[in-house]
Image 1 (cartoon, rainbow, N blue to C red):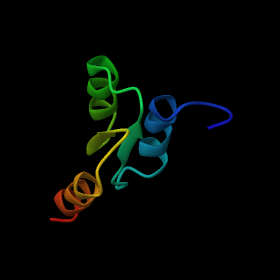
Image 2 (image 1 turned 180 degrees about the vertical axis):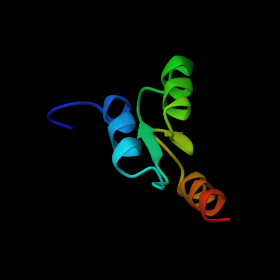
Image 3 (image 1 turned 120 degrees about the vertical axis):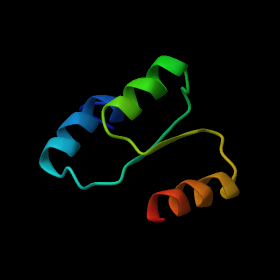
Image 4 (image 1 turned 135 degrees about the vertical axis):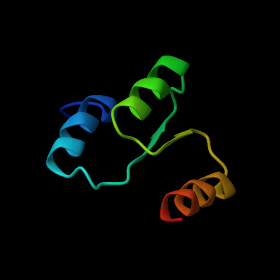
Length: 64
């Protein structure tokens, strides 16, 4: 993202649209980043490279 990363953008996304269901995806899946994303409203965090089944699982979990 050109102006800020997703973890930085997430609080603003949740402020503007608190009903948003966000799944974060990053090649950098360090535990502190994952914890920050979840604390700031992400419903799940997928680490790249990911498997298609993992993406589908995350979407199904959020929709159910």
